Amino acid sequence: MIEYFNQGIDQALLAMSGLLAAFLVTCFLLRFFADKLPHDLGRDFAFNGKLSAGKPRGAGFIFILVFTVAALLFGKIGTEMIIYLIMVVAAMLTGFLDDCSRSPWGEYKKGFLDLVIAVMTAITFLNFNTNVVTIATLHTTITIPPVLFVILAVVLIWVSINVTNCSDGVDGLSGSLTIVTLLTIYVIDQIQGRDKYFSYLILLFVICILGYLWFNATPSKMMMGDAGSRAMGLFIAIAILKTMSPFLYIPVALVLILDGGLGLVKVSLLRFLKIKVLANVRTPLHDQTRKVWDWSNTQTVFRFVIIQAMIGVAVVYLIQ
Image (cartoon, rainbow, N blue to C red):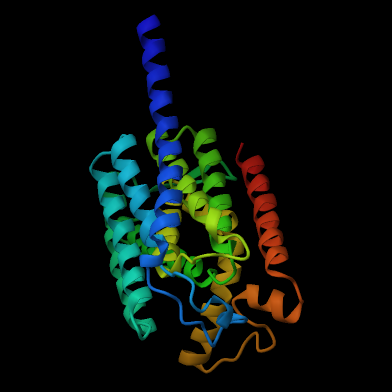
C-alpha cells in the first residue's frame, strides 16, 4: 500500500513538473527567440490590422513544438496519441509556412491541406475508438455507421481548424477562448471518467498557450499566426472527439464558432450561391464589436471569454 501511495506521489510530481517545465520553456523561447520569427506586414482587410505591422508572427511554431516535446517527455502516450501529435505539428507547419510566405497562401490551398489533415485524423480516431456516440445531455448513446462517422468527424475537424483560425484577430482572444473550451472539455472528461492520460495532454496544451498569452495580452508583443490557430483548432477537435460526445463541440466552442464561423458562412454563400446574408454585420464578429459597437480589445476578449465560460458551466451542469 505504501509503495503504491509513493508511486502515485511520484507520478503526480512528474506531471506537475511537466506542466511547470512546459510553461517556463515556452516563456523562455518566446522571450529570447521570437525575433527570429517572420514579422507581420499588417492586414489591410482587418480592423486596426496595420497596428500589428512589425510584430513577430508565427509564435505558434514555438509553443506547439514545446507542447509536442513535453507530451513525449511527460505524457503517457501510445500509437494513437503519437499520430495525433504528428497531425497537430502538421497543422502548425502548414500555418507556419503560410506565416513565412511573402504572399499569403490561397484559401483553396489552405482548405485542401486542412482537409487532408482532417481525413487522416478522423480515420485514426475511428481506428482506435468506437463509432458509438454519447448524447451527453440525454445520457444516451447512438451508433453511427463508420463511413458516416468519418465524414462527420472530418467536417467537425475542418470546421474547428478554420473557425479557430478566423477568430484570431484580437490580442489574446483566440488563445483565451481555446483555453476556456479545452478546460470545459477537461472537466467533462473528469465527470465521464475518460482517458486520464489524454486529459493530461489537455492541461499541457493549455499551459503552453498560457506561456504564449504572457506576451500576447493587449498590447501584444507577438502573434501566434496560423501556426498557432490552426493547431489549436485541430487539438480542440481531437479533444472533443475523445469525450465520445462530439456534438458537445457546438456549445463548448460556441463563441469560436460564431466569431470565426459566421464569416466563413457569409463568404461561402456569396461566392458559391450568390446569396448575400449578414450584409450589415462585420465578420469575424470581433471586428463588429470593435468597429461598430465600439468595444475595446480588452472588452472584446473579456466579454467573449465570459460568455463562453458561462456556456461551459451550463454544459457541465447539464451532463452530470
